[in-house]
Image (cartoon, rainbow, N blue to C red; front, side):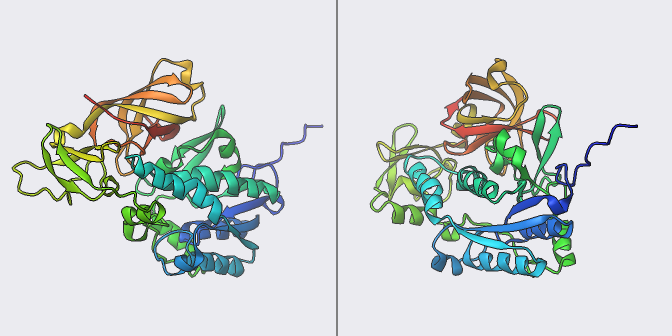
Length: 383
């Protein structure tokens, strides 16, 4: 008799029928995660929707265009009711405050420019929520992120989304190999956002035309300084605006109002040359400004590295990769030199402007779509 064939893999890569496969879908209330939940339910999976309440519900109800707000919880619940699967709202307010908001405030006060959405994925969604999914006996957890997961010869790999305009790999670089085993990203292969909205209409979802979230959820109107002043009263101490050559050009109302590379709103008009913020000195409360060429950086120290390569990070003296030092910039050629399993010096083959401590430096294959992880920028060195 011929040997029995191996159990066929379902669309999520698991060796059992969809009806026997439990999937927890992280639902923000937006169109992307709603489509993921509806799509998997339509394919016959045992879907459970979970939405996180991340900050004050009363304030959230009045906040538009930000994920995980009160209206979004309501929208996620309506999708679950329409598609016929259970939906739970979990109060993660304390976890979110401790793991994300407090870190955001501390980073700004230290002169860095943090990316709280990455910390939220790293410390809340892909850690605490993922454990909740396991507690619910889920076989995997699915999200609406635009990124791809492929199984390579050495296990699951992270790859950029098929649509470069929607790719969210910069915000997911800290996903660990263990998390990647459990996670699924059903939208990563779609070529355009219009395809996602078309799926939402096909399933009759009321969120089909809902606008994308744009703001950081706990920062109204993008006003970082006002949030930090509420979290750390008295933190915005005044100081001097100083030219890199030592000249005092003016006064400021707090270092937290400035970021590396900023040109507008410096309050030092009347000068013959355009000036940019090139450094923030928290200890002396000085905002140091200079000409644009002073922003150019080639060598970037990076820490807290999460490595997603097949070999150990320190197996080679250097890696020839592409890196992104800002979410809005394309990957650029670089040499990554490991200093330890979690620290490296990154040499940018072409200098980048506005490299800022607190931003992420994400590693990509020199050719192709694979994501090799990344780390956090700890400083900058000119040259």
